[in-house]
Amino acid sequence: MKQLFENTKTASRMLATISDERRNEILSAVADAICSQKERILAANAKDLCRMDKANPLYDRLQLTPGRLDGIASDMRNVASLPSPLHRVLCERTLPNGMRLKRVSVPFGVIGMIYEARPNVTFDVFSLCFKSGNACVLKGGKDADCSNREEVALIHEILERYGVSPGVVTLLPATHDATAAMLNAVGYIDVCIPRGGRKLIDFVRDNAKVPVIETGAGVVHAYFDEYGDVEMGARIINNAKTRRVSVCNALDCLIIHRSRLADLPRLLEPMKDRVEVYIDNEDYWGTEFMDYKMSVKVVDSLDDAIAHITRYGSGHSECIITQNEDNARRFQQMVDAACVYWNVPTSFTDGAQFGLGAEIGISTQKLGPRGPMGLEEITTYKWLIEGEGQVRS
Image 1: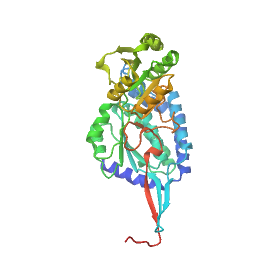
Image 2: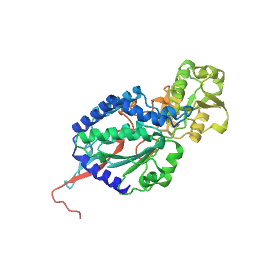
Image 3: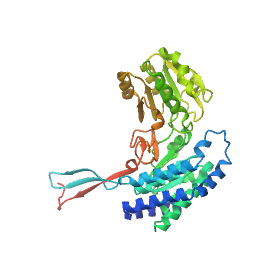
Image 4: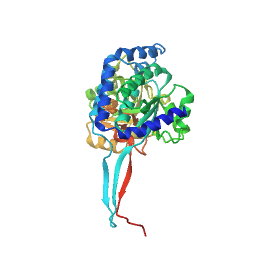
């Protein structure tokens, strides 16, 4: 395992010599290969799918389709089309003694990624890391191992065709030992990003010796205010809950003002017979369902709704449905989450939807990046100082 880390670290230094134009060319070639070799990827994905019960809500997250592969390729091309996040002058000044200072953006170096049954993440992470000059070490879950290995093999083929070391993207075995090795890879991995459920994220945070950026776990609420529009609310709630139930931006709890309780059947009508609903059952508050299940909390005021979110939310995405601007602004000001929506479903919390091309994850922490993480969020900076022999007194 140490040799793999050393190879990736060495390859990360070589990335600095590749121009942005060349990077874009390679990303476009990988995107083309995804489209031209769909059957190869889907065959590997089918091996993973046959090991999972179709009733498992994670089945949808694991499944690749021709349409989803087209979407992945499109996202990769979008990443290639974006401006480079590197070598940007973030600030510049000249000191009274004549020294000239610049703060410029640079890659982290090597990014470690731990994720579960999400084969799309392999391509997304590669595209963002490669574009931003980072090498990556990937640790996927065993449920998606066949898919991940075929995807990385395809990426390696394109890299070798362009004379780039395949070490810039390394896939570790889908074992617990590999996870432990990644979390202890001090000196090799500059930052580790877990993408998955709360159990995975807590484990990584509690055991890692390398720096960690927390992403993913989402206990998501929508508050239907006393001034909410019923037809709009029904559309928003249905889209947030049922578009894809296994993703982290899916709705988990609908909060409704007591004065609008009579409208609850209409609000739930679009998902009738599809979603199991638990009304005012505190056993389910704070639950990330990732399934066709949802809790409902009845409150007496906007402040009660905010208090409930404060106690049970995960800092991911929250929503208010209201025609009252004062209430909306108060909600957006008081709710502590990475993304706070007004009359828009939380299903839009996504790097591609935010114009970032793709995402490496959705950060729920406050130190460093927050919300969908694109190219800029996986760079750091360094200071460049120039002078004419000044010395410090």
